[in-house]
Image (tube, rainbow, N blue to C red; front, side, top):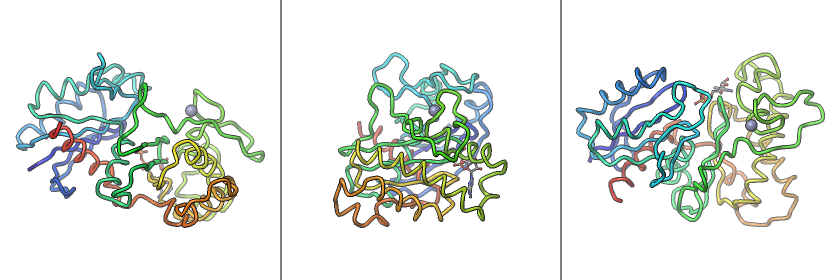
Length: 290
Ligand code: ADP
Ligand code: ZN
């Protein structure tokens, strides 16, 4: 069986063909420009590949509610050319296979739950810290949607007293994405995150915000594992800082075996940055089954 996988991102569309076990047989990357230019290229890639199903994990906000009038539409994205674009409809017109759809971060979460370090668990969160911050939520063995889908990157946090400015999110002065995304690090320190490796104060502050967010997710969702991915989390020195601060913030209020073994509780993504595309394979498989 061959499954198509489309990781539809704001800067690039990763298209791949994979197998049930998560193996990726081939993969290409198409720049995300306008829908008129990009969508035909995606269709051309999948058209003659004899896929049995397709899984799509899309940038958002995106309507992931089957049955909704705008199911499969990209919603109020700042990428104006894609606003209210019926992405799923365009794919369905040209590709005659079942198509599964979810958010990009839910896709990554599903990849880790199906093929990676969270296999077998029923409550897991996946957080990406990159150009933006997003949270994929797997609860009671299902991806969480709700009225739209969670926007865990925009939870409100307490600003550090020594962090003079608010965050850079245009909608919130004090949200996680505004404080801790790659671009916010660059705005605050005047250099790209990768050029700040030897500045401990950068990672101290970064971990201050991430740990607050994780503590809130722990309190609300009670995940059995927390996975951190995205470009910024390649800075491995963040992990011990985050774990230490989460322990302080939880402050003994929750005592579980998971929290006691915090090194295996708050962990890096385990699939070499393929968690997103592998999650798409599973979305395709699920669409085939249903
Ligand atoms: P995207 O979020 O666009 O899918 P990434 O997850 O790679 O892509 O995130 C890009 C952001 O992460 C940029 O702001 C970049 O500065 C930062 N970044 C990428 N690689 C690293 C790294 N190795 N260390 C620190 N920051 C990084
Ligand atoms: Zn925000």
